[in-house]
Amino acid sequence: MSIDSKTVLIVDDMRMTRMKLRKICTDLGIKNISEAIDGMQALEMMGKSKPDLLLSDWNMPNLSGIELIQKIRDNPTLADLPVIFITAEAEKNSIIKSLQFGVSDYILKPFNDENVKVKICSALNVAVPQN
Image (cartoon, rainbow, N blue to C red; front, side):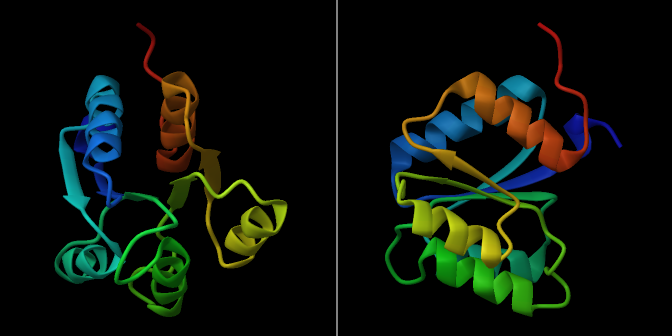
C-alpha cells in the first residue's frame, strides 16, 4: 500500500500545530488527513473510520492524549493502531508512562519536520520519499 492511500488523524487543541502537521503529511504525499481538537472528538471520528496512523498531543481539554491512548488500547478494533505523541511533555516519567500505555513513538515539541516525516513513514511502514 503506497503512502498516498494512507489515512492520518491529527489530534491537537492548537490549530497551528494541526496545520503544521497537516503540511508535513501532505508533503509526504498523504491525501486523507483528518483533524480533531481533542481526544473526545478523535474517538468519535475513529468510531466511524479507523485511520492508519494517529498523531496526538498529550495535553488537551475534555480527553487528554494519555486518556485517549488508554481508550484506544482497550478497544479491540483500534488496539493495533500506531499512535505517535507529539507533545511538550518532556519529563522522563511522562515519556515512560506513554510508552507503557502503548504509544508507538514520541516526538517533543518544538519538533523538526524531517524527524516527524521519518517517524510517520516508519509508523506507516513505508519508505521516506526522496525529494
